[in-house]
Length: 415
Figure 1 (cartoon, rainbow, N blue to C red):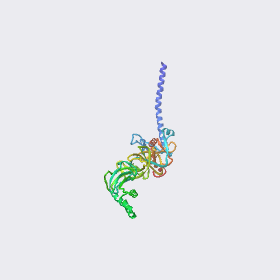
Figure 2: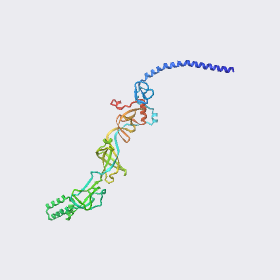
Figure 3: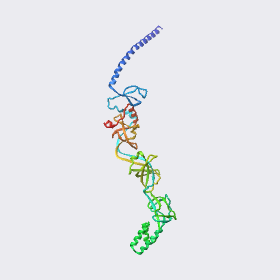
Figure 4: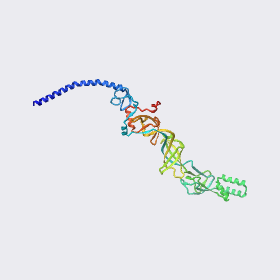
């Protein structure tokens, strides 16, 4: 028992000595650390100088001294000047970049074709119209089996009209022909022409020697019979419109173009039309007229396209998917549209410089089509831009307080 109590007493004494020694050594170590801290801070300050302070949640706002952020309840973070020239770039290890799925594409130069896809409706060609009128008074003796909307061939008969005036003139003409007086015969032939008799009918009367008082109205062109004002037994007056035919050899396509694209459309521009009624059929035409008025409800510009219709396959009223092929004919710079970061006030791209270094650059985008966007300002041919993962790089640049510049400003020009 005496040995056990002796061991316990020795352990208690050793513990007490350790506690006393600790209280004596601790102030000495703290004083040494406090003495070394100013020296270490001084060395850091000599090596790196803070350019400004910022809030990581609002990196665009800079402060000229440290303190608490006015936006969040947190201390401002200093941004130090770097001795290297890549202080305005984001550095990422190539292995990490591969894991993030970063992809790049080169800035290309070439002729930029910008197709515009719109819709259109077929209509009659109002320039291909034949109006059939009566040149002399008469009576309708026969009407052929036609009605408005019928498809007519050229020279199709419409009606037979009895012209009494022609009967008297033709009788006089035949009498002078038998008389043999050439001058009087020529005068009589001219009178037949003035009564509205067709030259073919005059030749037939002169050849047959018989009076032909009937006029057969025919359609001078092939197309759709739009109007037919003929009934058996009715009296027609000189100059009265009896029929109207609209040709189908060429048709119009009425296209609605958004007013924002109005400046890119010009007469003579090539057009490709596809029709749901005829899958796989493509018709190539050209812009014939840009109408001067705009639809106030849809804010669209009306464009008239003329399409060939040799087989009569295209019918007015059909809808079409129209592609207006626009080409400036000039060589321009372009990048994939997915590479552009649009912030609302400006557009940025992440420029890949060296291995693992990326820099935000402000650009001025132009037309966009088929996944490509024209770059009017900010890039040069051959540079590489990030097309996938660029938003992660932009966020990292914002956290570091890196402000996007332009290539013009970098080279000494106006930003």
